[in-house]
Length: 347
Ligand SMILES: [Zn+2]
Image 1 (cartoon, rainbow, N blue to C red):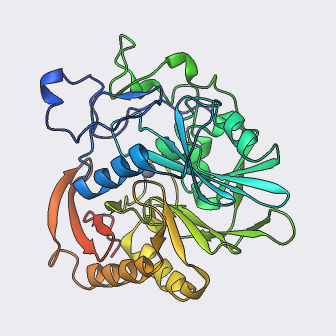
Image 2 (cartoon, rainbow, N blue to C red):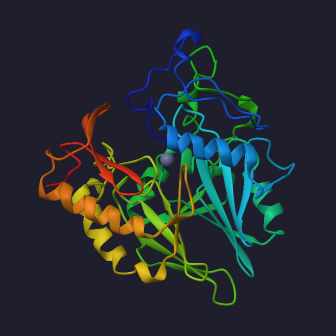
């Protein structure tokens, strides 16, 4: 699919001089082949400390040879969290692999750097692999073209279909120097078209013997943003709609449909529905930072959404500037903040 390539909103495609690297979080020791140069997004001390402890000391880290850009953590007997460093100066990203009785399911595909497919095949013992994404952003869906077909919610399909061979261009200066992270450009995929399968809210996959995973449409961060509920293990894979730092409500992307679902108003209505199902969910596994979060965070998010809708521009914790104007941040108890603009509140 060809659409004009546009650089990421609010980002200069120029590598920062070393003098500007100084006020960044402490480095994390790791053997991954990528090496962070500069963090564009400020990362909170708590989120960073969790990642540092986990990545440097965790006993659930799995050694593997398949993908030099990935770290693997075994959070349950049949659940692997796959870590990749961010390539564009934002928060490092988690993908998840659920190994069912007959099939495996990969949730989010990262930036595409390295051999995620080979890694999944090794971890799953060669099971048939179902691939789905929470949403279409760079860090969650640019690895899609490593696979034949990828599932997403129907309101997110246009975002996936807009991908093309130039989606990684923004990671480099015009002279080819990577801007935010050092890595071997040859380890990016050779672009190929893949099949996007758009499915509705409630769509369910069977990984064998009735081991079901259900797509739950949430909107919020993006128009078709969805979570995936592993009904057996009672885990919810929730992408960027629950993050232990900040959940940004985007208001939709210019040129893409269904922007009305990327609002606090729509997200709040979906939180009301999700809160009614809290008895089915024990833990949340977000797309970034802290994971295995207790599902009570759903009630915290619901409460914050209600407060935001009641009085959007008072009672916020702080504001910051985003590519689309002032972001209002409200605390989400036990999680982080919910951030929205005047446009993305949706009322
Ligand atoms: Zn993300």
